[in-house]
Length: 248
Length: 113
Image 1: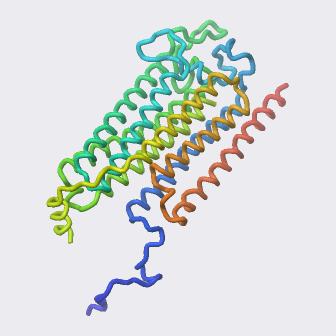
Image 2: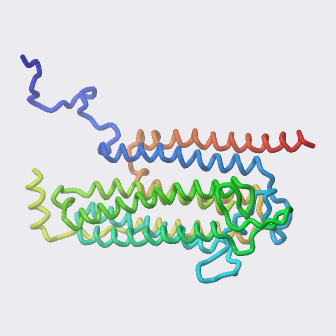
Image 3: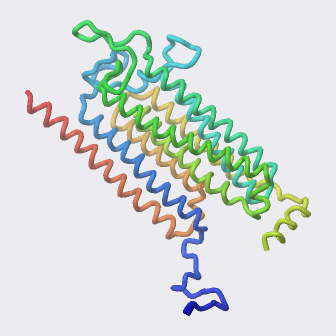
């Protein structure tokens, strides 16, 4: 025999589950707490970077006389000074600046798509999502170039005392400095790139849904907001990676 | 109720005008802060002061991204604190472990001297 009772009115008491203390939907809250846990992961990566950097010798001479050595930690702007199509020129951080601009722009177009969703403006949501997808893909392309250049090296390499030359970088040695430098570059920018790629796939998915009118029929564009939260988080992580890996 | 909404939106051809002023303002602030970071990167010798400037500017950028773009500034206080407090603890861990790294480096180099 069933003992369940049927509610005649929804529960509204404070401890009956009838209130919403955080005034945000379940999906958005879960995205926030997922992003918090993700921030711990990236925080851990950057903490390990700081720890490793401080437990290695820092370069103390003049910046102009800097040379690569496995003895000391490299100056980032001496490592990341190449730009596609401008071979052999010293353009410190120029390409990273471009990548940063692209990602900030993609964040702006994303928030514009969210804003358009609030107004139920399907055409604007489509337009701004498409821009975000375009900038996201451009960023990923830039990162692919950056990685391949980092792995291949600058073509000069690093001459060791025993006569061998290290060209480029892998997980066990690199021409720029201690092995940990390249390891952390691969792990930090790689993990961030994976996040961008995941976010990009979600963007394509919500773009298809928007075009098909799924959210319009649903009556709200909250899914665009949730993916937007994720996408802004990816931008936020890049702001920190940019400072701690490239600037300092 | 859902079907009712659908009809509402399909028949009402009027779409409200976009309110994007605050968004573009935030964008300009973010670009300006990044530009200032580059100016410091190229005009100042590497030092603790320069690193502190970078970190402060980064926190400002994070404030604008999280507060405006992710809309956290306009959420309820409980939600704001439940995100910020754990992050403050992680920041402390970072400070502690960087100090630990310096200590490790010094003790290793002095040990073999």
